[in-house]
Image (cartoon, rainbow, N blue to C red; front, side, top):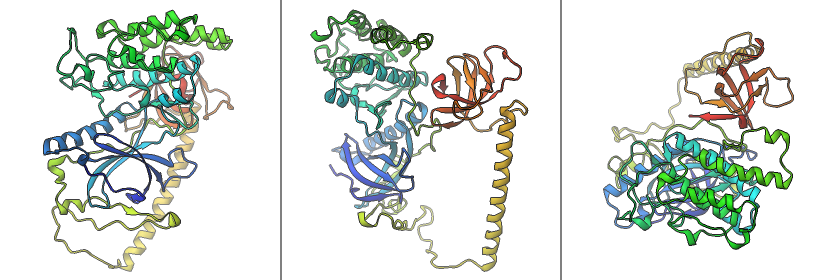
Length: 503
């Protein structure tokens, strides 16, 4: 076993590795500072997940290829299920450590609030707090299922909190499965939370099970076991690989105890066909308990009671965007040829940084040698002719002028189409779409200070063209019913909580 040498190093001239968060069976996790990000940015600190195939004993070419492919699949899965309550991928790359070992890495958002298992240990959650977090997990998990991804390792340790502990995000899609294509079922997950159809305890056998098809109900089983932990702050060890049948003694006299047991018991049946089949069904049953608790606490107002509770609502934290970075294409073992000195030079080398000199310019990149032309001589200190310099200056001035002119035209068009005077410009690139959950006001700016441009009716389809804080800039592409007023706008800003985003 050989660990990567990355401590106190600058990765890709951008990420200063600060500390180690942990180590898995095939990856090392670090906290890093992004020197290109503002200190006020929510992503000034990031997580570097580095694939280290040498953590495995008796490494062979097939195992190495599998690890690299799984690592890339994790990135693809994260981009496919991008959602306010799922951890976001911010970037990726390949590099060499101080020992010249080539490795691939993913850049993920850093969530310093810890996981929900830690939150339960440090401070018992109230039922209201637990349901607040569970609703967010349901929103993210339901979105993943809608996009064909089954997580397969839902547990409190994989549910991470933002710094203010108001937003929870699902993490670790390392064993996630694309439902339409993957087969056969592999044994993964944690025994205490994994359903029988893929629990490691049933490796090589399914016991008396006659129906083992992997469906979203597998994640619902794990989510119900996790909900038990969040609500009771106790481990479900007495119900490992079996349905939940009772609550701890301290909770049995609560007015909602029987209702909660019915929900958790149904969600943890051994036969997946007897469980809730969608996350929305599971949350619909829990929402009844939420309403009961809100009434008891005096928190239920007329406005809240009129809102739908059957659809879990996402909670959007600062810094979220539905737009994913460029898709990674990591080389697998056969193409990478890690022991080849020639190919190793293609990956940037990490460099040590001095804490006292972090404001200095980063060290230059090592020279890149192309695979097909390794013998080409290196060209050093050859100044371009003066004629080329003059051309570059003129070209730069022209680009700046055109950019300013285009920006003015775009801003003017946005204002006019927001007033309904001009039609929207169709975007040739793929954008996220969604559905309005309720009748929602359409505003000219991202805030409630301005007068509405009109109303977007419930179930109307919208296209998201921009994102700012807790607001989406949208185009209405299909009204669910005719406009109440012909003057109602078709472009503007709406609050994110009222839009169900689709991929």
